[in-house]
Image (cartoon, rainbow, N blue to C red):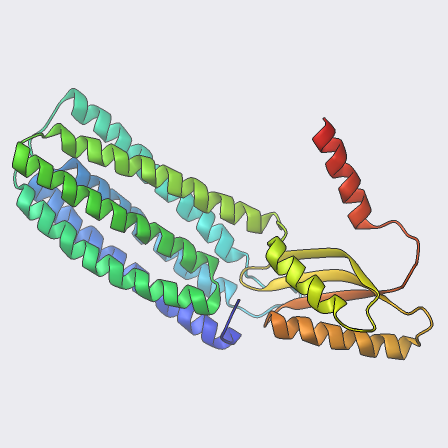
Length: 313
């Protein structure tokens, strides 16, 4: 849940993505020099990932700036889903990095190459680990305050870098101690598989947001329980929810006494709407009033019947 207003959230997200672009550029430069000096495929794999970070972080920067714009006449829900597009592009870059390194790893198994200075590689990975950990700590702070999917995706990418750096450092230590050069290639391939797994996870989250997947049952049940706690509420049905990119949207039917005047029904509905917005700051809420006991075709019933048909088949 967002704990800062839209203006503060926008500033935090822009600062986070700016820091990400700068750090990714620094890490790529350090690893490039280390890869040339040591000849380590594992270090090269991490450098390729950092190069992808530069591109994906730049895309995230553009997405955050775009998504922070206020709603317009032609985009009345706002531009929050631009962050999901950014996350999807990042997933593609992560997957591309993983596939490239796997290809290089297969080539190294066929034609093994020695590593010149494993100790230097270990030192470089340690420095990169400290820099990356500091960036992740800041990004997680921003995500807690803003619920930005783009920053969360960027942070997840750098979490992969932490695992990558640790694995590479361990692999280089094995190479240095035991002179088992193929172990460096094995670590690189392991990192690549991890990259592909992470890419799949990010892509699933982004697609879920872009295709308007319902919010979690925990959020939906919390809303229903609170609305039904009002004494004048006779029930809630046809609840629909979605994430607009850090902002929740709820639509539902509120069952009220059919004898109420339109003015009074509107007044009570406003009370419910304000309570929902208090529970989920920044959310958009649309409520349709129904007379209690009214017989009608409901979305809940049609979806429930469709689910039974799918389950039976």
